[in-house]
Length: 277
Image (cartoon, rainbow, N blue to C red; front, side, top):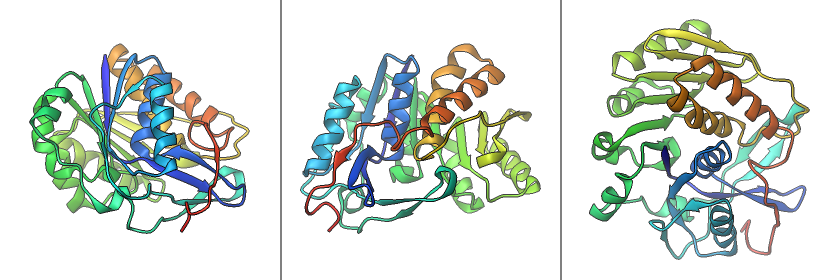
């Protein structure tokens, strides 16, 4: 099985520790796919031309991720500041909008489409800024989409007809709203809908059959990347086994381990002069 992740990359900055980690939802997810047994993993995105981008590229290559179709522009990498709270929870202070993730949108050309055809699963999401291309991606393989906290029905209706797997961070929804969201996604053609619910675990549905999964014990210090890791592990497991309960169990265990370290998957670097400007 081959998985491609399309979308964002970033330097997650922990100002109080004077370090940054490679990150971005699309990058975090594909690293998790690779670390959970998928040998052929690719990333397609837009890099800046600063040291942070060089470090992110280095890490992706070191982890064995294919990046040959990525773009590079003259701009700084996205550099959100991460503020840790109790029990590893965090908040973002968004980076300025004049970064590589904000200035340009990834435009897929014919050569990209031919490349993407080589993959079985194509993962993207709200931060990928690629919604307009979903109609062209749909025929190429299974489409996985991370909505993050975007549960607005208008947005959901614009995306779901083109995807197979829908993932949401839905701890802000009550039980009735969760079930309504799942029903809505299935009605629009989505095969699997997954809601991660923070301390309440996760709620998944395969064509209307519901599955619940509790969180695993963890000495959590930083939940950064845990949701992306959960998705990456699930995508690496379920399509091969078709065992929903086992896939959710494994994904929950993997996410718990991520929470025991700072950053989404390691590789810290000292914050250098000018990164946070």
